[in-house]
Image (cartoon, rainbow, N blue to C red; front, side, top):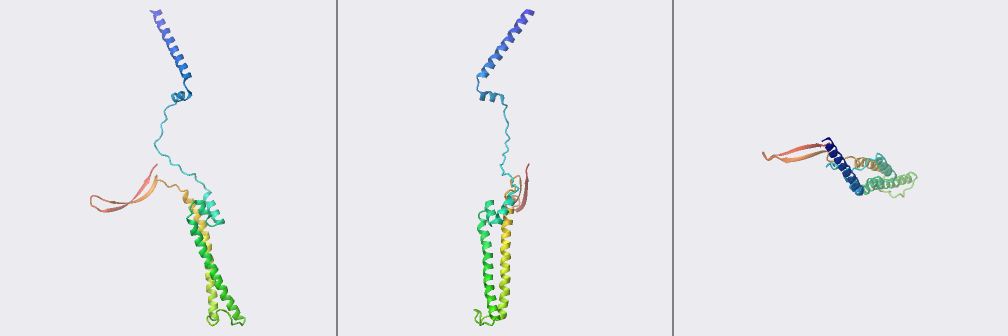
Length: 203
């Protein structure tokens, strides 16, 4: 009986060795792609959709402000807000136009007043404006000229600030994970409209 069990045991060991050898040979014949598929474990992919966001550039606001300081409207072009460029030049052009016009009128009144002080009576405002009127006109035109210059400088500074702030806001992360939305709903029970505010915060 002992010899019989030993014979059966050796027979099973030989069969297993043959099977192992055969499987090894067959695996050598398989392509590498099939071997990789057998070895790899199934990968579980999360169903959450990952949104691709542009990398934050801390120097973008400074660049936009610098470009607008060199050439008004260039910072807006850097931010992609091309529709703002005509507004920038219209504002600056208006301020420059009024400055030039007031400066021209101021020089006319000043030259006429100087000729009267010199004893001439052939200026263009003769018999229409008095000496006091010319002095008052000089004050008004000079004040308007300085105000126009101040407005022009303010528009230039506002152009730089707009480019800087716009570059900040363009990189601000806005998505549905954090949102604050107003809503209006009519209740079906009493048929009364109700106004509310919804805050969504998701992880």
